[in-house]
Length: 339
Image (cartoon, helix red, strand yellow):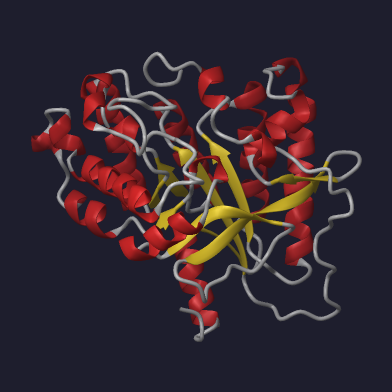
């Protein structure tokens, strides 16, 4: 169940903009496989936006333990505080306490989430930022984005104290909060010049908010570096769709829960993930990025597909299932000219 009084449908209605749900550009295709390619590592990067539901934290960590994958969790800071503290957050242009995704229902829920964050971080997973209240900041200025980032930082640093459990704060939490948040993904994948300027000023290493026409090489020479979720072929007609669970959910059932078709949607998703992976593994070996949310849409079809996919690919030769920051470091090592 989603935190607080926020319903699943209310969160799902806000996690992707209609313009990004899917595309009718039927002519798009993955890059043609090169006749001969260097045998570089095939990187697979899986991330989770929001990272709120504690049951899904449990599920993700079990998948990681089974497959050896490292994940990036893009945290939303309103889930690091309860409804009682909501007035401490003010989004740009909004009234105090406004949030598109709500807040945690109580301090016990927050404390469980903080324990999961720390467990994941200690296990080699990455914490990134998804901002706070999940608003569309496409038109925000750099100063407005900076205000959002500052509030995220404050919420993460003070999370244990906010819920009255400062005595339980792990040694190293403050260092993590101050130094480990290197990446960002914008709500609704809505980016702009103001965002990129603020990211650079705030010291972010990379952004993962953009979309590419197929798997594309990360732009490591930019500040911050740009990682783009790809369009991948899906379904009987292989129409391109953003490689994210919500976009598959809208493609398959128009955003309406139809768990009776779970088996069909799961099969289509596995086939899409594996085809996109195979095209790169046997071809140019461009990193493959997949995005998910902490919501089991269509009966959990997409998480089950992810579980199957990672179980199949993470143990293959030359394959590394890594966080965004790990991928960035590996890419820099392979190309010393990268920033």
